[in-house]
Length: 122
Image 1: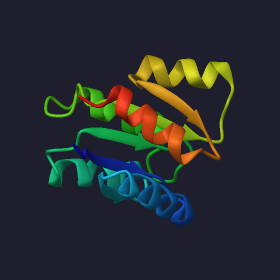
Image 2: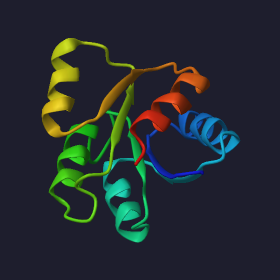
Image 3: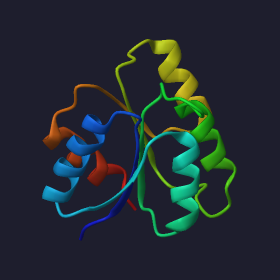
């Protein structure tokens, strides 16, 4: 059964790649251009099953976005995958501390991304 996934990334190319990979796997994708937009889209789409977010974005970065999601009673338990070019252990730990469920380094493999979503989706 397909899940509803919120993708949060400031790169249009990356958002398009995510849509293609996830919709081909039967999922519905809601897109946001940065963390602030992600907060808005989360409020407008209460049935989000999984969130995939970048870290480095304007207006609100991924860490702040994750923190916001974890403080939201409606979305607090929603699994969050971080998809970023960052690979430093300290940044991974910071994301885990904020409440991220998993971490994938860009560029991503579509099959591995879909498998990760399947593993963490409720």
